[in-house]
Image 1: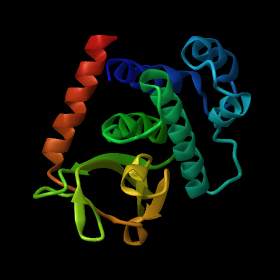
Image 2: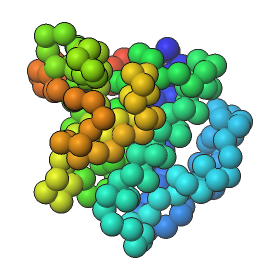
Image 3: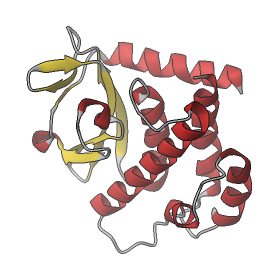
Length: 193
């Protein structure tokens, strides 16, 4: 867990300044930085991370590309730090990374949401509640649900869907509590770096 925290912090805090909206300047620095941490990283993933605003894709396609990239990076982080890619119990780490990338590379306005799956929101699938964190993104008048760790509940590894068309019910809990959890983890990550 400690290594995963450090990697999440480094990915959220170090990767994003290297990826510039005006070009692919991430390739060299990312390759150098990632060589020690991610020996199995592929050139295609490196190229995939070199996102730009020069894309002719619509905003929702860019959001999907950014979120898919976040999932790939998060899987690599899980493998490097825990020796597997299972997302069980890692949703807060995943949303911190994903929120940072959405904010940096899209026009969307992300907000981390969550709940305990019992009395204060959560993810509900077939009437069963789960404690979980995800992101709501306001993008061009729509609210989209973004989830890169829903596979721990049998969902697709990447969910990007309009709030009314999600594969499960995402019910936000107390935002003050969610914000406190996010700040606490960010503080722990900062203290360990």
